[in-house]
Length: 401
Image (cartoon, rainbow, N blue to C red; front, side, top):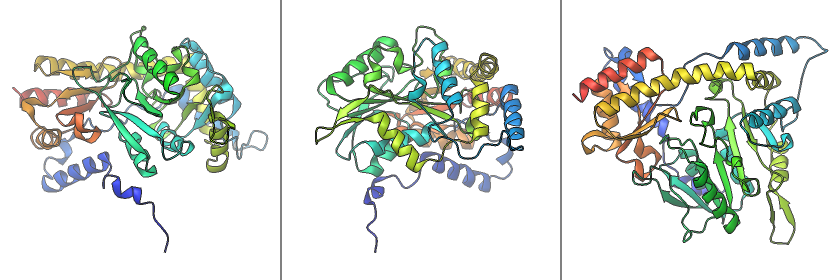
């Protein structure tokens, strides 16, 4: 009989969005007359189609696969050189230097933020924010690692800062944040880099929503901070930037300067470890997708992407304006597609979820699914259509009139 990884006994029985789907299904079955009226502003999936540049590049790449001269089979696990260069070039346009050799192409930031845990021993102490994207917690729980939480609250604008009394080896940061929409400024990120360097810790920085940052003084990468290349790994993707949620393209930056000493005194490069891990366990992102991604990351491609992002941010403005009129406190909605607000009348988030679904047929995400500090908060996304978002907010406003 095999010995099972019993750390799975400590993982919640149902992933957050699976439970949301279950509750919505039950409502649809018991209220078939209202099922067609449901507006989904919960899961962070996009609704705008791929841009013209992406579609043209996908067609072009498919045609290349049809003839021997340009056919591509297995590609490099790290990603094609042209795709890695395109990512490095994109960073450069935002004022950040990243070596293309340190860029690894993958099929999703969710995958890489989960898989990166394999590089770190079980007895590392993990520090995550609360509220938190559930993947950070679940993957480390599955590994049996010790997890500490730093409090994100209304008092600190859901942007917890380093505490010198807390010692951690691995630190998860997400900015702009999922779920709260809060965004660290450069001085705050500098404090985290200094903490990591002092404690010989590694920051795992999730910048999946960097393209939504509209205020120029706010950093879109941890590498905008001096010294970060010695202590940080960054994860990003085109899922939200270019609507690639169903197309799947991401990139992880693992700098050469990330070198630590093993117990036997040997110097170990995290970049080399990740490269070795990927070459064994990952067969690479399809050539067709990388070809399209490189076109998306060009100036013309990003101009089209920003048009879609502007569309979503107009939805965020609609949601934020509604909350202001109802005097409901919130964060996000400016540099982020997420709006995180306090549940009216002191309601707990799962109760509010049911109340909103039953009385307005609007689906959001209960804050409790992101941690203890989300118990009385709720997340809405701006990834719907203008029409659906406007209708949802009209129902919301009427419900709390």
